[in-house]
Length: 274
Image (cartoon, rainbow, N blue to C red; front, side, top):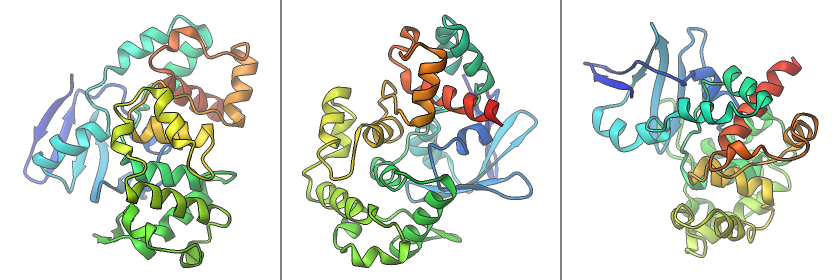
């Protein structure tokens, strides 16, 4: 269990296991974190701005307080989950065990559901630098100022816009999908908080009714935004890895935590391909 120490200007997470900032924040599950030349990460989530860095094996959070940490950041970084036990569970499969140990610092971020949904709508047929650029412009144009950056805009804000209004973010064909998702969420037709309580199958079925949302985008939204760690998003890389290393099937030892396995596999094949 992590020890949390609240100091004057920082929060110190001691005895950190299975939490590497670079692996977690730069593995393709979130797009609003950046690192400066001093290896300090900064970003906005849930309308809150923080900075993070590693120090002598601890994770240091600057810009937050005890209340926000306990009510938001602890869940956001999934600090209550025993990733060591999950890695041990995956050891039943030799290749997955190698992948898990190579990427054991990844944690699944518990992102705000609407932000996750929109982010992965934007991710379709896109590369990470361009995804980050579109999301950054979306926030700059329609979010609220926070420190030196902007919050992710609300569903209500985006629902009031037209596809023409989104022209400055240069999202192309994805604009109409962003608007459709925003209007369905804003109207209450789709309750993203309720998706957390539904079964994975029912939650996925609901998201697939949104224009432009296919199985991969739905699974990303469910995994990174709704806490469904059984969701297993499949892109070209993952499909190829399943065929090459796992006989085309998700290993049975991933039951209940396939989404975490997906991140380990994705990171492992991305790094080994370099």
